[in-house]
Length: 93
Image (cartoon, rainbow, N blue to C red; front, side, top):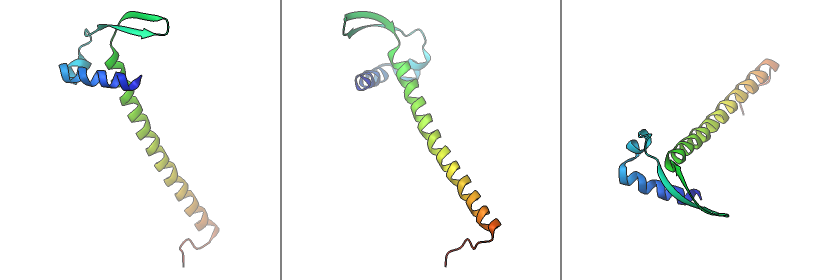
């Protein structure tokens, strides 16, 4: 379903522009959505929700990556300081 919504939203973006679409809160269209029970008409802003969820996923994935980098750096510093505290040589020969 995401692929179909993404294609639809890209067409809407080309038609009226992304900035105008996301900033115009009055832009609600009536869509006919088919589900298992049949077709019903709903008035919903499909693309705004899609774009914000996409941006949330990007921010979350980058945040997890940075958190892993920070955690690895902290662990490395703790291990090096522990080795120095014990008195072992921390350079390879």
